[in-house]
Amino acid sequence: MAIFRKTVRMRYRFYGEVQAVGFRWTALTAAKNEGATGWVKNEPDGSVSMEIQGTEKQISRVLTALEQDKYIRIDRVETKQLQKVSGEKSFQVSYLRRE
Image (cartoon, rainbow, N blue to C red; front, side, top):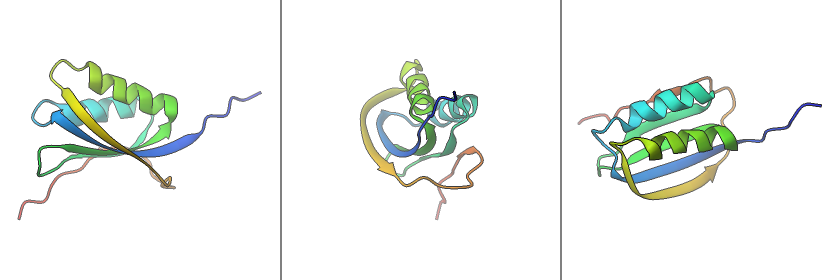
């Protein structure tokens, strides 16, 4: 009998020491290792946004990797559950457009 794993999509906004410390690359590596999809990007206010889709276990492991990184300091996180995105194939680092 197969174990059912519910896929969810979450949006996180991280505040603290989260830019210029390898946050996006840690998220990318952890998400790819876990098979989660979505994106992560720096925000102009110094925070980092991430949308991630996977099982609760996959997402939890990505968050743990971020929390355990010695250079990252997360002071506050805003969280929101979203509708799943069908057809998404990978996890990517998105970049701000400078105007």
